[in-house]
Amino acid sequence: MAANKTRSAIPGIGSASLTDLPVLHPVTRPMGGPTTTQWLAGLSWWTALVLMAPILLWPFYVQAASKFTIITAFGTLWKWVPFLFVSGFLFNILISMFAMLFGTLAGAALGLGQVSKFGAIRRPSWFITQLFRNSPWLVILFIVLLALPFEIVVFGYIISIPDWMKAVFGLSLPIMANISEIVRGAIQSVPTAQWEASESLAFTSRQTMWRIILPQCFKRMIPSWMNWYAILTMATPLCSLLGVEEIITLSRQAMEAENNHPELLVPFYSFALGLFFIYCYPIARITIALERRYAVKL
Amino acid sequence: MAKWTEKDPIVLIKDVHKYFGDLQVLKGVSMEVMKGEVVCIIGPSGSGKSTLIRCVNALNDIQGGLIKVRGIDLTDPKLDKLALRKRVGMVFQQYNLFPHKTAIENIMMAPMLVLKEKEEDVREHARQLMKKVRLEDKENAYPGELSGGQQQRVAIARSLAMSPDVMLFDEVTAALDPETVKEVLVTIKDLAQDGMTCILVTHEMGFAREIADHIYFTDNGVIVEHGSPKTFFDDAKDPRTKEFLSQIL
Image (cartoon, rainbow over all chains, first blue to last red; front, side):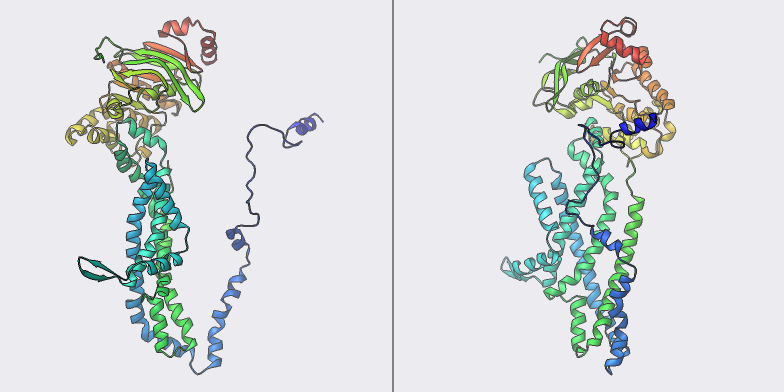
């Protein structure tokens, strides 16, 4: 009885809690409803099969529908494989590497700008970062393609800018913005005590940044950096919409050359898909391994 | 500005006021530390002890009063903070070693980058300091491989590498396991005996009594009482001091 009495006296258990102290309320999503991840996790296992059914059933349909069989289609693809790989896929990789290079350099500078002590540098850096982080890549690509001149005149020489260079530029913008956030996040994840310790040893703020803070950030940035490289690589087919002759554009051209048999679509696009998967999957695995290894130890 | 001589206090703190926003943390604190003196600041947590010594090497700025370190006026708007910090070493509660550098590199960085001394000389000096803090066999260990007490001794050596005139210790044993506290205290005691000017914020009463030349007791942003260890511990006047000591001892 006494115990019961005590129990009912405990606010929050036995009775409604009334306090003027700050209270941490349980997290509720402001919009209500499940998150994308929760929704995804809630789907049944056979959803994937249903979604894949058209692809799985495709060969049978094709077999039944025409003389141009799936075997013929793969035979045709086989003929084009060397061309698609060398002129197409390797070009995608080239675009991804250049875009990553420029994006990383610009992003590193922008990220440092975001932690600058001068507002005149910090605020524009923040704005540029947010602008390109939150815009659809395709829209950025279109704007770059249409806004940039197709040739520039330098000292009387006309230098034409090929579309693929514009594509590189266009893709490097969102990469720049995301790398900028990675750099800012990594710098701010270093405990302020590290700043104080190096300040008290009479380091200048530049020395502190380059000798103490950035070397500690470097490892933490690598996994996210690789993650963005994989995302970028998978985004390179967007360039086909700009007419850049990468793997998707070339696949389409090859299919045209083969009289546009609809049976060719799945083999050709699956081939491209496979190449991207083979290239990006190891990157994803290594990223996860590195993330685990570099998990912040204090 | 009168030139500093050895007869003047090496650290002069006069009527210092410090605010964090609207909160006043220091309410007119004064203190004089002569060269070679060991001063301990004790008091309940939140009384402004740490804030006070962080002001001495300009990690915190002050809103009123005066602080001078070896004649350098910290309230001067043109204060050269780097020149000041070359003279004032600071050791923190959480050691704050640079985790990406080995013990000896931690010690060598500041003399090489800030004082631009030659690497061989710096390495030689760093070795001596490692020996002084009794860690000569841990030169190439990374901070993560060292115990708390060992890290704290490396941190002390790192500050000493700049050959400062004054050393500040901010509750340097508060985060340590009881069994490693002693090794750090022995290191500080060695330093004090070598004639280093030390200002310590500490909760180690026995240690304060043993090594301090002068003890200051702070409470609520003011210095309530100060004096030699003997008078302070045995003959405290102020009721707040008495209450604090009765809780601790």
